[in-house]
Image 1 (cartoon, rainbow, N blue to C red):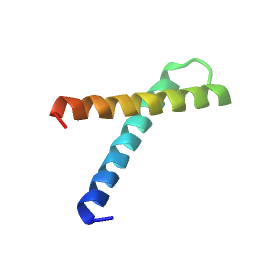
Image 2: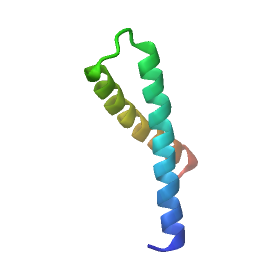
Image 3: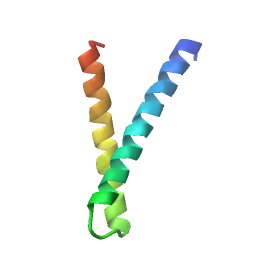
Image 4: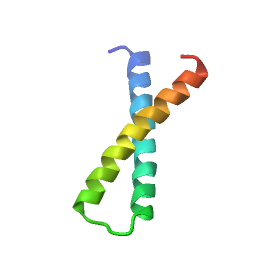
Length: 63
């Protein structure tokens, strides 16, 4: 992997991780009961939303 490709991959991973962490935390704060199923559903939903947020940001930049 060349340096620019590795840097872009790392940046994309960091962006997804950041979105995922913020959205998962928001989900946990907003629910009333915190059990294992709620954590799993919240984490998976946040991952899907993080992918959508990254795609929307890239589309708005024209890439």
